[in-house]
Length: 199
Image (cartoon, rainbow, N blue to C red; front, top):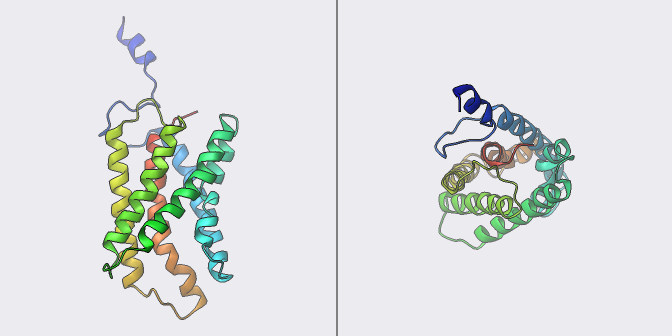
């Protein structure tokens, strides 16, 4: 087989090494739609905080996946909607319930790590179960992604608890939760873009 034929046979959308952390063009497109989902989530979060809706940050979780699922609506819409809307909401709830009973962690490092890893790892597991991961995806990168999301969650909760977590204005109350959700969801968008199967 000639070199040209070998090159033509490779799918540039697939990753061949679990240690390749770059996003190819297909993954960048996915990342873009997931970041747009975070923007929608942030708007929803501001409304949830303003109207004091209990557990509202959990119930608006589908907003994060909405743009991506809409973009990919021609391919396995029901499965993606199930995972991104119901599954991710469930994982968000499980992560919060897991850390809600933890004590003795005033600065939030452990709770943030556990919550970030449980939420992210659970979401990746659901993607794997429902066949949404790319052919070149590997357990090595998914494990790395879970640890990365735990580390980002740890940092975010620490930032939240140590930089004005008890705001005295509406603007401060709205900005505070973004300290947790914005960095974590951007990291989550990166991990998902890296592992999701391109259309």
